Length: 181
Image 1 (spheres, rainbow, N blue to C red):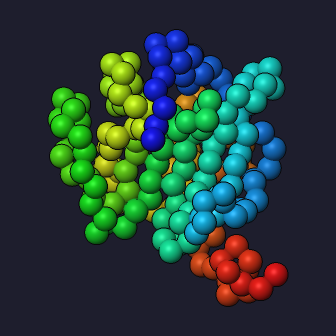
Image 2: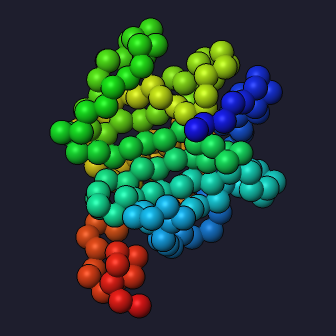
């Protein structure tokens, strides 16, 4: 269950999103997640003074290899997320999405934008980012969404950070995918 956050938390996220930031260091390694059946990578986000206050989490459910999610995690909660999904996966939007001009159902890749979900969180809804915004069908890889996430959160990427990608096919010998160690 998503935890409740207050007005001060929402204001702190607003400030975090507008401040200039960078990703710290080189590309992260993919590792087994605490959740069975998932692999993930974390990339620390540092502010202008080098303080790390959040991270980008890349996650792949092993049975959906090729369809990662990319989130900004702040204070232990997701504040923005991109889900790369096949077009046949259809998700319902809550009724409040209509107020933003968003469709009642979203097929394929989509984003859970802070800006779309902020008002509901301010009104006391659990912090779960339920509102989805469809993405163009050509958005199919981490390298497509990472620059968009960086733009929305004021994160400056270096040239080599643009090329970070999720594993596309597991090796049968790779321990991340159940192979021998």
